Image 1 (tube, rainbow, N blue to C red):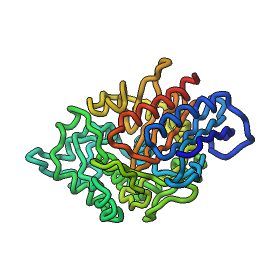
Image 2: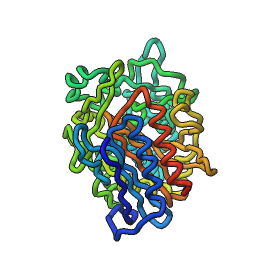
Image 3: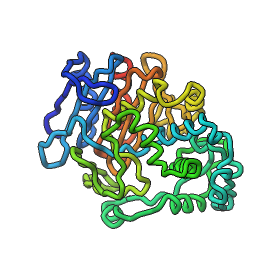
Image 4: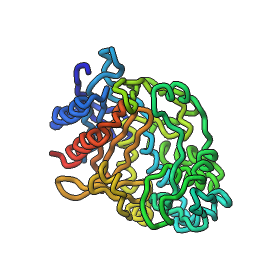
Length: 377
């Protein structure tokens, strides 16, 4: 895997580099990233920010197989579903401005869009609220094209699907339960939330995130794919192991039809610290975001003790209390993160290999790192 390295630096909440200031726990952070690469992950980068805004950075493994090129300590990666808290934040900001209500029906903003009969079960947007979309309690499921093999990846990695098409496909899938009667993780919920943002504002959801989150917070290293099949430099390459094989397949180049964010550990820490620190939402809306429900048993295996708010996950800390965040995974890039309730401590971890048969172990090791950083042990 190459030689592990640790970089200790200081940075302001904006993510701008500052004077070099050592952190005592930097070498200890290194143990956790090394434990992740020991599972077979090609490369890992982690950045933890303490109460004083100082960052400890650790990298392990290599940026590319068959080389000794080190993982960049502030490399770009696809954050995937870690974009969801940003979508939820914009919806809640619009609610705070009186431009929508999260207890309104989806039909009120997207007439005729959420309707269908999946395997005999009716889908009706008049019975689903915006809150249920952001909370994953709508019952809606996904019909996402994916890659189950190396051959499928090479054949379909540049296929394009519009958001409207992905929503239409989902309308033919039987809902998991009646609205509000269960919990099921669903990307379709957030595709619909993005469409509602556009319906209310007249702008694309990306523009709203740019104007409301990225620019005000100085997140200059957060960009949209905009049709590109790769990432800005520097970045570590991503790899996937497909079912029935132990081969590492380079899956860096892919067309992300959902247009989720590409970012860095510095920028994502900036976002989470601002969100929980009350810089993006008023107390009323942040309180709504943190009203949680139980998750399903399958997801509980990945997030032990976890609960789900509005685009935000709550998990317990071994030292007491809880933390918030929302990980993600896309074509080999896996993001784990966490932020203290007051927004003062945070950590973001990016892995560059998806190991389906070790998914729970990967998540557990990343969660150990997050807990270490937030507990300050």
